[in-house]
Image 1 (tube, rainbow, N blue to C red):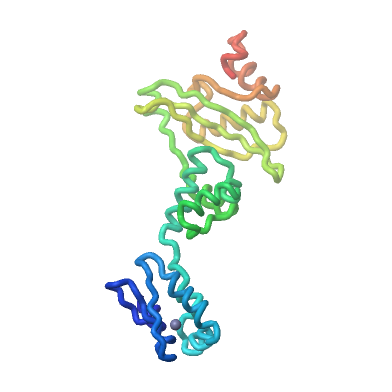
Image 2 (cartoon, protein in one colour; image 1 turned 120 degrees about the vertical axis):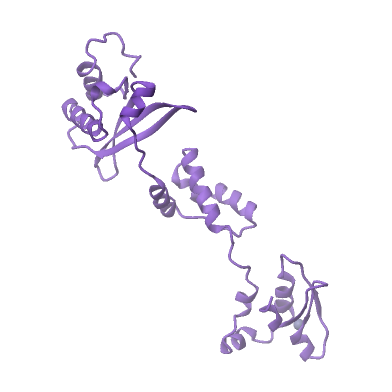
Length: 245
Ligand SMILES: [Zn+2]
């Protein structure tokens, strides 16, 4: 409020302000405003005092310029809303490009009266990575209670052509079934059945498990995968092509 009083005599009981500049010219101008918006004060200045260079004067005196003076304060929910956006992307499996979609930005703009400035795609990506707390699995405790967990094994290649193996575990919890990423690890480029099997065993052993501790493995239908998970591990389970997919 103090800022406005530089140019207006503020009457906060009646929510009206008397312009000091007009007063100097022996005119009386009373401007109404509300608790949440002082746009009328700004408008009065823009319309009535174009002739005086208030900004230059203010700058010379080290005071905020008119633009700064009437600019709304920074949006207090900026951080909270950015965080909620990140959680929404994670929870609903949205692509990170969502934050740059005009329709999504419109939702935020409407909801906040255009006061929120949406995070960029790069920031969204960075913050999702920061949020990824490693999940720890206690095989002994788990298996005593629920038996063997099942796993999903997936291979993918990044844009930089590095390959990764992702192992997810499917477990029982008191509140139902749950899937967590156990490990994401670099895998040497030759995706032979042999390499896949070695990497999978290596990941399991990092978590104090071996192949026998896994009930079923879900993988895609690539021939190298089939070789590892059907032929090598359960070669005696014939005719279960579909069951283990
Ligand atoms: Zn005035």
